[in-house]
Image 1 (cartoon, one colour):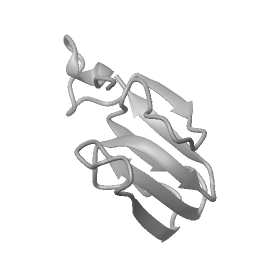
Image 2 (cartoon, one colour; image 1 turned 180 degrees about the horizontal axis):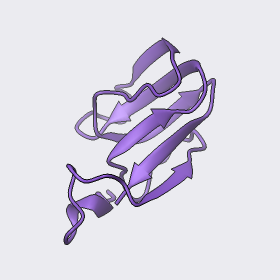
Image 3 (cartoon, one colour; image 1 turned 90 degrees about the vertical axis):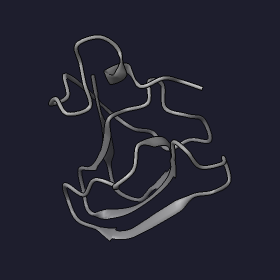
Image 4 (cartoon, helix red, strand yellow; image 1 turned 120 degrees about the vertical axis):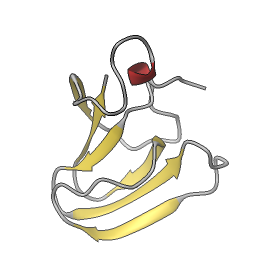
Length: 88
């Protein structure tokens, strides 16, 4: 399993992110695991938190722009809008 890049060295979970990327929903884990996932447009998002089994997803519906799931997300399995990761 991937390790959070922000968990290495001087970058910490309480710091602002230094990298970002648009996420393409998939059946694979994000690598590296981001410190946050942010909705860039309104829509629905289905995630797998870092501590959950692969098939144990959580769906958030009707998310506003700027919504951040309250979990460390290791996988985004579906996103009806645009979502991005914040890393390091």
